[in-house]
Amino acid sequence: MQALNSAIIRSLTFSNDQIGFSAGWDGGAFGTDTRIYHGEPEARRRQVNHRLSGAWRELSYNPETMQSAFLDAELRTQFRRKLLRWFEREKRSLPWRGESDPYRILVSEIMLQQTRVAVVTERYKKFLRQFPTVSRLARASESSVLAAWSGLGYYRRARNLHTAAKHIHPNSGFPSSAAELAQLPGIGRYTAAAVASIAFCEPVAVVDGNVKRVIQRLTGKQVRDDACWKLAQELLEARRPGDFNQAMMELGATICLPGMPVCGRCPVAGLCQFRGAEGRSIFVPQARAPAPQRKKGILRYLLARRNGSVLLRERSADASLMPGMWELPPLERHDLNKRRPILRLRHSITTTDYSVLIFEGGARNSRAVWTPLRAVNRLPLTGLARKALHRLQLL
Ligand code: SF4
Image (cartoon, rainbow, N blue to C red; front, side):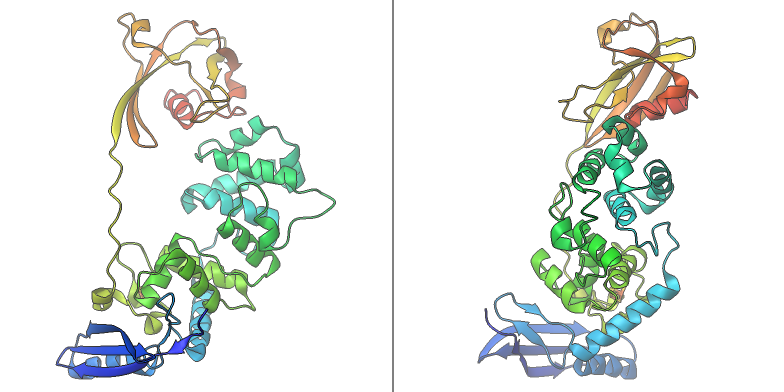
């Protein structure tokens, strides 16, 4: 592995509104770049000075990866200080903020994967009221864990969390390093680093979609995942790793947004290569993979009621989607017998948009069971069954 080499800025060219440079190391050129600057001459001069006196004065590149150690030590210190001050001032008040219990942090991190903060907030509190400790979760039945997860979707996360809880032996304590946490089933690099840094102050950086976007914009480059992890680790404030990681994610979630970043409110704008519209010329977003084509389908279900109970069916344990979850009994078209639906709704599952029709009728599905309505909430219902029963005002 070659050491980092300092690059030499070989040439600088100025015109009314732009500056170009070429630079290289060991006698070879590795790149040229041209930046557009806006505003009055004095404003442009300040922008150019900023580039040359800061991150651009001592460019260091790793010739193997072509990645820039984009901030020198002094600027990294500035970055950490500005970011952490902003985070202390502006962080959103969320139920898991300031939490130091690793189990509670793990629950929040897993719930937040693929689910919006607004949805998670209430569900997180409810889940922890039902399973306040990792041992209570480990002792619970899978069905009760899935029921508590109902409505959050991606039930594999609930199953993994439950399995991980069973692996955490009460006598040996909660795994306290990212390496140990990553051994738990279903816990990936990001989750392990988040829990280790927030709960145990281990100086490990996290990279999720938000952090990756922030790093790409800070560097003004498309940065591969492995290089992103390295850069995040370089930037990390090792004395406050949990706060720093949360601050990076908060910046990406609230200021450095996926569409148009709000650079005017960004605490580290002075250290950023992208910095809003003026930096667009140096950031070429990767072509997005074409969105998968959405399909359409029709689903028909039976609503059968009797003495305060409703007929429900458990999906088979080897179903590819939502195994072991409960739903209204499905109907085939030939079962309809000219009946008209009592409810129509729309529901999307993965890449298919369904028109859902609910028909009222008598029991005819031998695998279905009569379930008292007051007990329905304790079952792991599919999102669609929950939605239909809500619309029918039965939940
Ligand atoms: S200045 Fe803008 S682009 Fe750069 S990190 Fe801040 S919000 Fe993101």
